[in-house]
Amino acid sequence: MFRSLRKWCFGTVVMVLWVGTFSANAQEPAETPAIDGGALFSSKCATCHHPFKDGTGPKLSGVRAQWEENAAPGMIYQWIKNWEVAAASDPYAKSVSAKKPTSMDKFGDITNDQIDAILTWVDSQVEDSGGAQNGGSQSVSTQEEGSNALWYILGAIFLIVILALGNVVRQLRRATGGETSEGLSYFEEFRAWAWRNLRYTLIGSVILAFALLVALFQTLYRVGVVEGYQPSQPIEFPHSVHAGINGIDCKYCHNSVEKSKSAGIPTVNVCMNCHKQINGQDDQVAKIQKIYDAAGWDPDAQTYSGKTGPIVWNKVHVLPDHVYFNHSQHVTVGGIDCKQCHGDMTKMEGTAMIQPVAELNKIEGNIQLTRPTLTMGWCIECHGETEVTQITGASYNGSSYYDEIHRRLLNGDRSLYEKYLKDNKVTVRELGGWECSKCHY
Ligand code: HEC
Ligand code: HEC
Ligand code: HEC
Ligand code: HEC
Ligand code: HEC
Ligand code: HEC
Image (cartoon, rainbow, N blue to C red; front, side):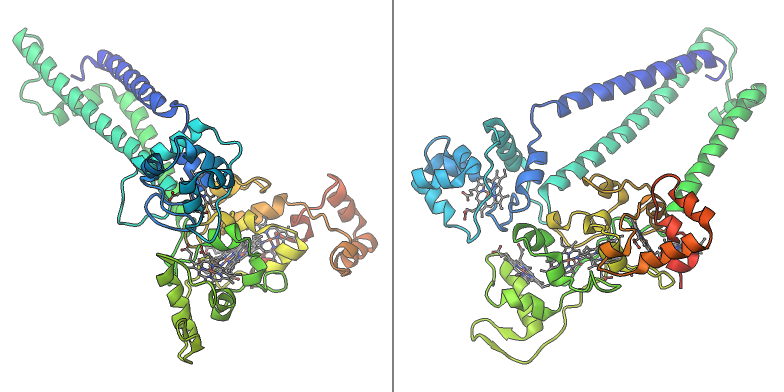
């Protein structure tokens, strides 16, 4: 088979092209259907609804059938567009509106087709007792895994076809009495071919070695990268419910974030400020009971038993001991939003996680960075790009911190000052944000 290499190469190219177009074609119809219900559900509804679990809103699986049975035709569209109007005109809608203490958002600009797509998507979901937190992202990941598997299968089929064809060629040669390589194994045949075509073999080997080297370095670069880390927590605390739907300010719970180095994690007492009254419904009850256990609160007798124990939260973002990081410096002085480094916590339904930099870059208004979150490269890159705007002390709580720097620059090394301002901006780097000792103890 190696003797007719040119034909083989041609065959391979044709095959790859064919496989390529085939898979491109195969994907197109999957993406074009007018509306992606799963994506719409994730972006508009998932903060309150889950297909199979009651949350802030009731579970939605099978809900369309219930409405068709009990409510006026088409009333479910009206409900989703503006539930108040629906509740005023339809008795079933009115009964639904009493289901939960919180009320649903209104979606004035949603179309009937979009609603159909969402409800069809919801009804197409299969209940998974593994308990994924978000139906939307769950289906996305299985889709990706699915297309990966497809490539492996195609690869395997391709290999089998090549080997089978090779065999046919050998048989044909033997039958037509042509030059045979009888008795030689594929490996021996390959070796003989490789010696005859030493130049190609060498070029091929170099390319292969290079590819392996690149792969090795890419793996090494990921060592110590903690992006995507999401430890389990003693209580499944949803930021989306607290900071999102209920609009509680981050500082209410992370109350030292503006004043000190660390942001702080709220104590049980902070939870009790609200949860003494809010004891939740359905699957929330068991979670909120854990707060009561920690506080030693008996919700029935409305008394404290005195038996308390801490909620042991697992730390998510952890820098090594040799690094110094200060929240107030970034949040108060630098004026950087929590979103820039932690992502949009108001949408975080699961427990907190270290957001990959690719996700952070998708958030509107964020400075675009390339290095993985929490690595040294990430800190350095941002310090190299970010402009320090509050350059005069007055704008920073009346402190004279930067005035002092200005004075020193003006009276000392004037050329340095001019160099800094040449591009009309002062970056964190130019103020010393790249000095090892600023970040390292
Ligand atoms: C802010 C939270 C919130 C969002 C966002 C939200 N809902 Fe709701 N939804 C609720 C609540 C709460 C109820 C229960 C009704 C009540 O108590 O007012 C509900 C009820 C429903 C019902 C009726 C359920 C039943 O049992 O009959 C449907 C259908 C529904 N929502 C669909 C949607 C769709 C579709 C979206 C996204 C386009 C959505 N909701 C977004 C909170 C929300
Ligand atoms: C009602 C209280 C509350 C509010 C409001 C709140 N958080 Fe939290 N936050 C917590 C608790 C409790 C934890 C620990 C559980 C966890 O890590 O999931 C936490 C964890 C975190 C973590 C991970 C901490 C770690 O260990 O690295 C970040 C980051 C965070 N919150 C950011 C925010 C941001 C940003 C906001 C505002 C948009 C916010 N939080 C609002 C209570 C709150
Ligand atoms: C410039 C990036 C950056 C910004 C902006 C930022 N954080 Fe952090 N945050 C970090 C880093 C880095 C850590 C890990 C600190 C450590 O391990 O010493 C962290 C840790 C935390 C923690 C865990 C507890 C702690 O203090 O270590 C919480 C909670 C938190 N941040 C909340 C917030 C909130 C709320 C805001 C917005 C008001 C915010 N962060 C803004 C980078 C940032
Ligand atoms: C400012 C008031 C407030 C504070 C403080 C607060 N919560 Fe909540 N929490 C709420 C509200 C409102 C809900 C929504 C209840 C509902 O959906 O019916 C809620 C719901 C919950 C739920 C159930 C969420 C779900 O949908 O599964 C948990 C768990 C919870 N809180 C834990 C905590 C913990 C732990 C703390 C302390 C770190 C805390 N909360 C502090 C107001 C608060
Ligand atoms: C999103 C951009 C951003 C990221 C990411 C970031 N920083 Fe910063 N950092 C700033 C800004 C802006 C300032 C300047 C604040 C000021 O003084 O005006 C600053 C200042 C500092 C300073 C003080 C520098 C000085 O000259 O006094 C230290 C120390 C620091 N950062 C450490 C870190 C560490 C450690 C990390 C990574 C874990 C980090 N930063 C990640 C933007 C960032
Ligand atoms: C803006 C803050 C910042 C500055 C400036 C900085 N570092 Fe780092 N450095 C970090 C952070 C954060 C880590 C830990 C994250 C990691 O391991 O990637 C780190 C880790 C390291 C490590 C350990 C690497 C490892 O893989 O564990 C070394 C060594 C180091 N830094 C040396 C330096 C030297 C030398 C300089 C000055 C040229 C410097 N750093 C300047 C933030 C900084």
